[in-house]
Image (cartoon, rainbow, N blue to C red):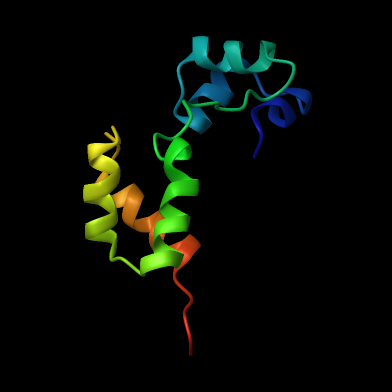
Length: 96
């Protein structure tokens, strides 16, 4: 149940804190927020390289390992897992 709904129904801050396993200060802070805040993290490191990766993949059909070596020389410092996920989901066509 939502903290704000519980507060509107008459639950005390102490009771809400016990039910949600939050501290009373946390409950107070959540009640004061007007809108939920969205997380805006930093832009992924792969973004500047996407056009190059797509072009090389369609041109040569290189594997993710070879593409990673190429963009590594171009300055890509991101995670290998994120790169492989991009290649798998954006470039590879799965035939079933």
